[in-house]
Length: 101
Image (cartoon, rainbow, N blue to C red; front, side, top):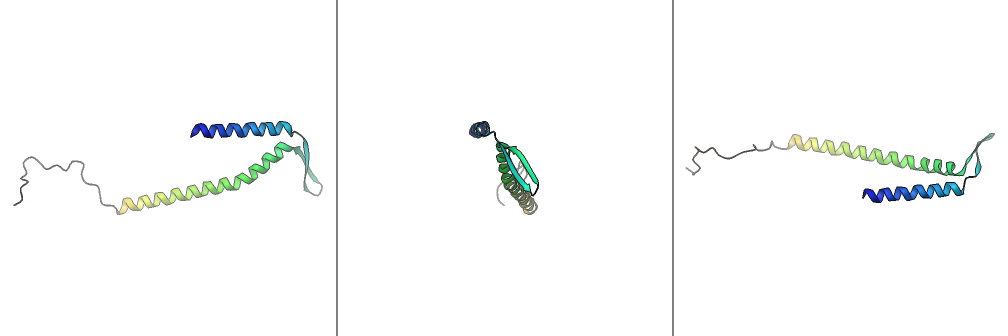
């Protein structure tokens, strides 16, 4: 599975490099009246991608954190309610009579 993930990342990085090489042109971004940012197109595309990725990444991290807390709370509840485990060796002593009386 790790090799597939690595291959996907390499393919994405190669595609980004090709896109960047073919579109290395300056673009003007008007932020406010009188404030214009001149940047290269690949930088603008990567910034937009990151701004879209960041909220979803934070949401996924928060959900994972919440689920881990819930699992830990449930495990602690089970440990508190469960009876203690039996002794490791519950074999009778050799002097005991095992016949019913």
